[in-house]
Length: 295
Image (cartoon, rainbow, N blue to C red; front, side, top):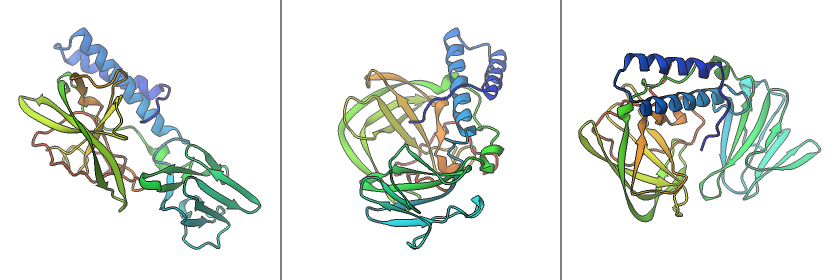
């Protein structure tokens, strides 16, 4: 799940564009207008996070994925644009996957680095780690002054479409572990916990519903999908939609495809995104995030 952040001037501009869309659409009810405003706020928050030099997914200079007991090193004095993880142990800084966290040795400094913590290398660069499937570990070198963050001008989204909010029926199943290959050549596991069925522009559509642990109650569901828009107006690798369900999954609930986003791999080569297994939808879901303009 991605954390929420404060609105910015960019958010005001996004809300202004939503208001302009309202003026062009006489069919939107007050409830739909409120939903469009919430979407505009959400979009502004997503874009503000990408502009945050500390948390942006665009600030990565290099990434490495480790199995338990593997070790890598780097030279923190290397210029930011050239800094890389290395397999050889004879480096000024070494990072060892101890089976749960990362053990770091750097000069006379020894410490454990857990997910959510940072290790500052200098005023610009810092290291973070995160857990992966089956005791895997990822280690990122991040740059607070990465030019991709400074150059980011916002996501490309379809205009808010009230018809992209549909009522769906949830059909539960016994949680089934599904292994996904990732673009980094690794594996990730999600649990298929049911199906969601709905109508899209007059056609019946069914999507698998996934969950990270498969343990009920499901207060969120993950929809991973490809559709007829992929490679044209949306990212060819597919998109995702996180359904937040604080009261658990009801038999019937709304799905708003305006909140669909691309996998981060659409903008960054360092992410461990899944290669989708389910067949692509025959319909074009032209709602949510579009293909990046510079893709």
